Image (tube, rainbow, N blue to C red; front, side, top):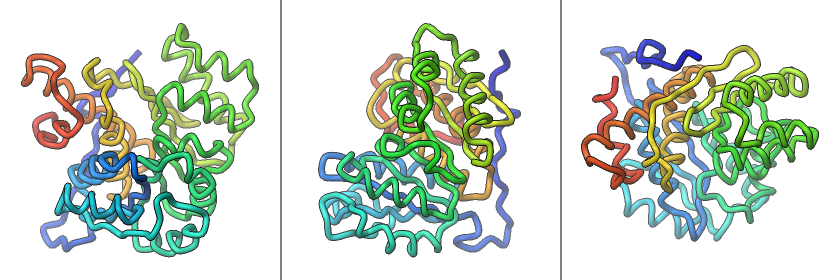
Length: 287
């Protein structure tokens, strides 16, 4: 099994004459009263990936908290505690000003109907994470990069009408990553042949899976099994996608860099005391 290496990472280049916006704008939709930090982590990660601009769309109180956490993020606030379907049309208009959208971080399952409708109707390349994944089936996706862990993948496949036998095989923790990835690729080809979908399955070895190819990533360590590291990963995906990279390449970049940052921190901290926000500092040292 070959693993992603530095040579496989594609970093978008900036023109010397670049102006703000030339390297992309990302919209992040999520947040609820219980989950604020996820949006801030994802937003800063997208900026660290190199994108020029990140706007976070969040419930009002969540939005003010994000303003306090970071001066680098633009925050669009909505008069609600949780997003409902009535906000879909407005956010679909907002997304037209952006190059990519990340949805799901901290969203909460009370916003399940909103997430499903937005994802179905969105015209932008999407990164779908966390509660966004739990709200949909693969038939709801268009140009989408999904970032599930194994439990979220199981629910996603159940929501997608996949047979119980196939779901049981894919979610069996005893199955090795190659067999699992090949089975997922087979399901994408047979069940969703017209969909442009990439799945970045998170685990001790990550798998980036499309209908055409599979890449495996072994950077990272057990210290990354902490709250927030997945939000950083999703933000990196969105940041690269917003700069014009493909769904697959964005996932390859994000998986490798996120894990490599974790490995760097393991050495610096001499143990597993690092936290998700530490991942946002040293991107330049791992490439």
